[in-house]
Image (tube, rainbow, N blue to C red; front, side, top):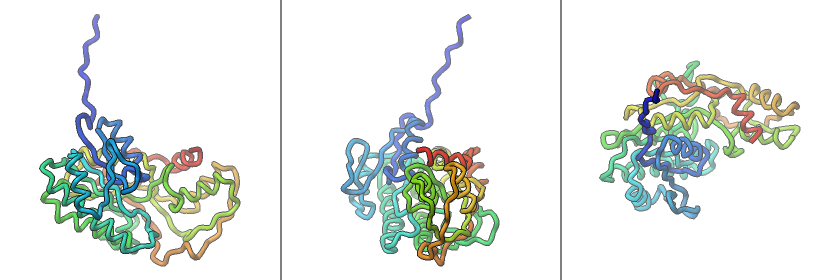
Length: 308
């Protein structure tokens, strides 16, 4: 008996072009891989002066002509806007606002003026916009109360994007904390893991009272891909695991991996007066839009980072 022939099912991104701004950043690396595996032809932007060519374009977000030129050449079907200042402690507030707000506006203006309309434009915002919320679990109905310039810039970006929602199918993602190999050591978890990998016997940290909803970067990249494919335009989505971990519990997990105890010292210089103490998110709206997110247990992510 001859088996029935099966027709090949086209992959999600087959025949479609994806543009990732900031493709060489931490998240961009994983999202590029995720989109390529789904069949997209992936293009990316890098900073002026960085190596470009092929599907990589040097682009200055603050140069409108530069942005328009890239959009005209790529003609993307979907856009993931990841480029921007991503570190809360970045020292130049003016640059934070210029890049995160004005730079994003330049991108939206270029996309809106292009005759070829993308099916989705995903803007990466941040759960930092919620500030020190007085609820146990933060969903998208919680009113933003940003507590630092980075968070204010991201919320301003969101409000600015509303001016373009009648022209472009915009989706806003508010990721909570996430990590993985390749994230720089000025972020908390990579710093902790690096100390243990180096065999350090002590570590200086800031506020030990903080608790965070940590996700694996691979899950975040998967969620971004699925939002680009299926999310209804004009909506905002928390991207998170729905679970919180204290700083103390994170250190214990890495101590178990490394097999030794580390001395933790609080450095007052690392304690910010406007630190957000607890961030735990609800991903109910996200899962209703894209289906189950399959969070990776934090212990597995830390092991991946420790062994990388």
